[in-house]
Length: 131
Image (cartoon, rainbow, N blue to C red; front, side, top):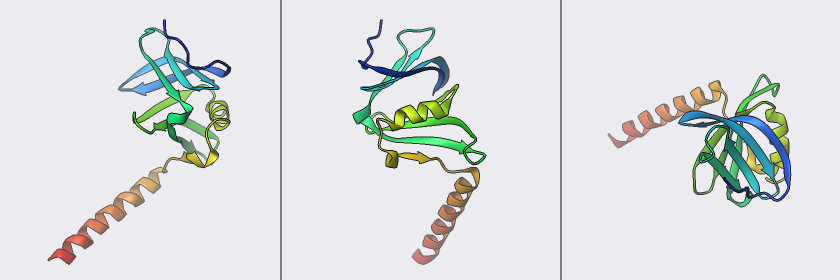
Protein backbone atom coordinates (compact mmCIF):
# COMPACT_ATOMS: atom_id res chain seq x y z
CA UNK A 1 0.00 0.00 0.00
CA UNK A 2 1.18 3.51 -0.83
CA UNK A 3 1.84 5.87 2.05
CA UNK A 4 0.52 9.41 1.77
CA UNK A 5 2.91 12.37 1.96
CA UNK A 6 0.21 14.49 3.64
CA UNK A 7 -0.32 14.67 7.40
CA UNK A 8 -3.44 16.84 7.10
CA UNK A 9 -5.93 16.40 4.25
CA UNK A 10 -7.96 19.36 2.95
CA UNK A 11 -9.83 17.76 0.04
CA UNK A 12 -10.46 14.30 -1.40
CA UNK A 13 -12.42 14.13 -4.67
CA UNK A 14 -13.04 11.72 -7.57
CA UNK A 15 -10.80 12.49 -10.52
CA UNK A 16 -9.25 11.35 -13.78
CA UNK A 17 -5.54 11.50 -14.56
CA UNK A 18 -4.52 11.77 -18.20
CA UNK A 19 -1.26 9.79 -18.21
CA UNK A 20 -1.20 8.17 -21.62
CA UNK A 21 -4.33 6.17 -20.87
CA UNK A 22 -6.92 7.65 -18.57
CA UNK A 23 -6.68 6.54 -14.95
CA UNK A 24 -9.67 6.92 -12.64
CA UNK A 25 -9.19 7.48 -8.94
CA UNK A 26 -9.10 10.11 -6.23
CA UNK A 27 -7.20 13.36 -5.77
CA UNK A 28 -6.02 14.19 -2.28
CA UNK A 29 -4.85 17.71 -1.46
CA UNK A 30 -3.13 18.24 1.84
CA UNK A 31 -0.48 20.16 3.70
CA UNK A 32 2.53 18.47 2.02
CA UNK A 33 1.42 18.03 -1.57
CA UNK A 34 -0.94 16.97 -4.33
CA UNK A 35 -1.67 13.26 -4.67
CA UNK A 36 -3.57 11.08 -7.13
CA UNK A 37 -4.36 7.46 -6.28
CA UNK A 38 -5.68 5.03 -8.90
CA UNK A 39 -8.92 3.32 -7.90
CA UNK A 40 -8.03 -0.08 -9.38
CA UNK A 41 -4.24 -0.39 -9.19
CA UNK A 42 -2.52 0.71 -5.99
CA UNK A 43 0.84 0.83 -7.79
CA UNK A 44 -0.34 3.68 -10.04
CA UNK A 45 -0.15 6.90 -8.06
CA UNK A 46 1.20 10.44 -8.46
CA UNK A 47 2.61 12.39 -5.53
CA UNK A 48 3.73 15.99 -6.10
CA UNK A 49 5.14 17.94 -3.12
CA UNK A 50 4.24 21.65 -3.08
CA UNK A 51 7.94 22.62 -3.38
CA UNK A 52 8.06 20.80 -6.73
CA UNK A 53 5.07 22.66 -8.30
CA UNK A 54 6.13 25.25 -10.87
CA UNK A 55 2.72 26.25 -12.31
CA UNK A 56 -0.91 25.18 -12.18
CA UNK A 57 -2.51 25.61 -15.60
CA UNK A 58 -6.29 25.68 -15.88
CA UNK A 59 -8.25 25.31 -19.11
CA UNK A 60 -11.04 27.86 -18.66
CA UNK A 61 -14.05 27.98 -20.97
CA UNK A 62 -17.18 30.11 -21.19
CA UNK A 63 -15.67 32.97 -19.14
CA UNK A 64 -14.91 30.80 -16.12
CA UNK A 65 -18.19 28.91 -16.03
CA UNK A 66 -16.55 25.59 -16.97
CA UNK A 67 -13.07 24.23 -16.26
CA UNK A 68 -12.76 20.89 -18.08
CA UNK A 69 -9.21 20.11 -16.97
CA UNK A 70 -6.16 21.47 -15.25
CA UNK A 71 -2.49 20.60 -15.28
CA UNK A 72 0.28 20.73 -12.72
CA UNK A 73 3.67 21.64 -14.16
CA UNK A 74 6.54 20.42 -12.00
CA UNK A 75 10.14 21.61 -11.87
CA UNK A 76 11.68 18.23 -12.78
CA UNK A 77 9.06 15.62 -13.71
CA UNK A 78 7.03 17.37 -16.41
CA UNK A 79 3.34 18.19 -16.60
CA UNK A 80 0.47 16.11 -15.21
CA UNK A 81 -3.09 16.70 -16.46
CA UNK A 82 -6.21 15.99 -14.40
CA UNK A 83 -9.95 16.54 -14.41
CA UNK A 84 -12.31 16.14 -11.48
CA UNK A 85 -15.93 16.39 -10.39
CA UNK A 86 -15.58 19.93 -9.01
CA UNK A 87 -12.47 21.56 -10.47
CA UNK A 88 -13.14 24.94 -8.84
CA UNK A 89 -12.96 23.34 -5.38
CA UNK A 90 -9.70 21.63 -6.33
CA UNK A 91 -8.13 24.84 -7.64
CA UNK A 92 -9.23 26.76 -4.54
CA UNK A 93 -7.65 24.09 -2.32
CA UNK A 94 -4.43 24.25 -4.37
CA UNK A 95 -4.39 28.06 -4.14
CA UNK A 96 -3.86 27.79 -0.37
CA UNK A 97 -0.44 26.17 -0.97
CA UNK A 98 0.62 27.53 -4.38
CA UNK A 99 1.24 31.23 -4.97
CA UNK A 100 -1.64 32.68 -7.06
CA UNK A 101 0.90 34.15 -9.51
CA UNK A 102 1.83 30.54 -10.42
CA UNK A 103 -1.77 29.67 -11.27
CA UNK A 104 -2.40 30.55 -14.92
CA UNK A 105 -4.98 30.04 -17.66
CA UNK A 106 -4.10 27.97 -20.68
CA UNK A 107 -4.39 29.56 -24.10
CA UNK A 108 -7.78 29.50 -25.79
CA UNK A 109 -8.24 27.95 -29.24
CA UNK A 110 -7.87 31.36 -30.87
CA UNK A 111 -4.80 32.08 -28.74
CA UNK A 112 -3.13 28.88 -29.97
CA UNK A 113 -3.98 29.71 -33.58
CA UNK A 114 -2.65 33.26 -33.19
CA UNK A 115 0.59 31.97 -31.66
CA UNK A 116 1.05 29.44 -34.49
CA UNK A 117 0.46 32.12 -37.13
CA UNK A 118 3.01 34.42 -35.49
CA UNK A 119 5.52 31.58 -35.35
CA UNK A 120 5.08 30.78 -39.06
CA UNK A 121 5.26 34.47 -39.95
CA UNK A 122 8.51 34.93 -38.00
CA UNK A 123 10.10 31.81 -39.57
CA UNK A 124 9.29 33.10 -43.08
CA UNK A 125 10.58 36.55 -42.16
CA UNK A 126 13.87 35.11 -40.87
CA UNK A 127 14.29 32.95 -44.01
CA UNK A 128 13.91 36.02 -46.22
CA UNK A 129 16.51 37.96 -44.19
CA UNK A 130 19.12 35.17 -44.58
CA UNK A 131 18.88 35.26 -48.40
